[in-house]
Length: 450
Ligand code: ATP
Image 1 (cartoon, protein in one colour):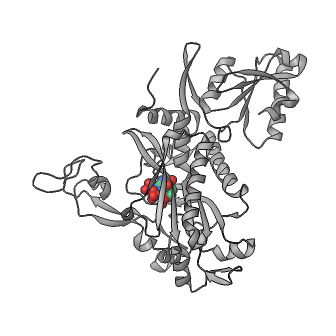
Image 2: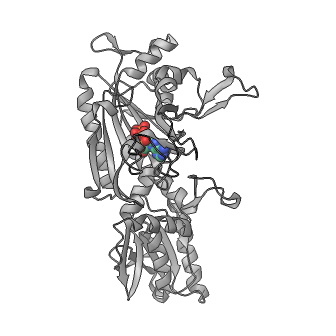
Image 3: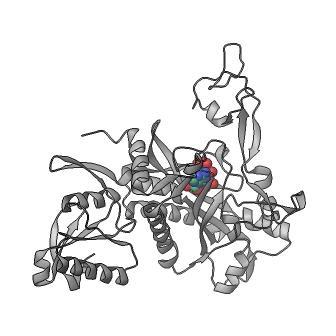
């Protein structure tokens, strides 16, 4: 059996994603665009299922969390106030010869090996050229609102969804009649002009975030910070990620973002091409009252909360679990990827949670040249499609074994096979992807079985 726990897992995932329509390199017919990816028919299903699972856990299963969908482009004063215009930057070093740009911390941490020569000069690890001093590079994408391209019309693509929540805090509070503690959840695209994107979809310049801003009494912020760490870790575990591949990593004081009092990351043990490496899936920060305070000051609007019990106004503290859709997509795929041997052949199988699997059920007539059997299969398909909220597919091409393998490879938890006996007693077989057991089930009970 091949070793797929090491770096070649990434190659297998990238190739599977492309072959089966999860993820394609973007703009390929024009030669591509570096580090940009498009999600294909199965990728969009997996992505949507991740977002649905997050929304269900964070909004539908709670009484005190409501949703929001704010604009990507917002008043640029928001980013002045939030500190992003002055502080949302990475230190950048450029090669004076080949003009490759590096993150200074990558060079210092030795990611590219030794870059200092014996005489003390910094030399480019790629071409040996001289490197510039480190300078701050702001990660926000800029554009202009309307036809005039001047400073007065400069706007930014949001680098996080969170600010859209803070500027709507008062409106949501009033219209939804929530009391503290309560939360506002949002899923949406964010943009960061990253200096070194890479590792497939791990770090890109356009990505989706799933963010919750949870407003609490300042004295209770520690308690809630802990609560959300456990809650979020359990979300990944419940969706099937193996415990040994997840860990918490508290931030050191010096690496805290400008707004954070404290922060704990949930990390996953990724298999990158360079080898196994812990990487951030999600940051869970205690933002204190930084954002509501700065927006109160800059906007001149009172964003405090009136506590009816104590008859006092105060600025709530905010606990923020902020997760990346694409990073968890990659982690779910890596963790689910498996190979075993079936009838002397290697079977690739994605052991994805049924809640995430892009296709939930495949309906397969045993043979395609029996019109009665095919008609029954079509009927079963239609019935499942109309009753369910998820993707059901039909496949009659190739041997039944080959069709099972095709579904295993994309993580379909159940295959429903219509055979000759089905015509006699209105039963079908349901094959389980993981146990490989086949069970006969009455067609009328099928929907409840899966
Ligand atoms: P990193 O240290 O990896 O750059 P970060 O600490 O800047 O990440 P946050 O600002 O905490 O990231 O953003 C919250 C989440 O958004 C991250 O945990 C990650 O899942 C996702 N995310 C952030 N930047 C990117 C990116 N460039 N590409 C894909 N996902 C990202």
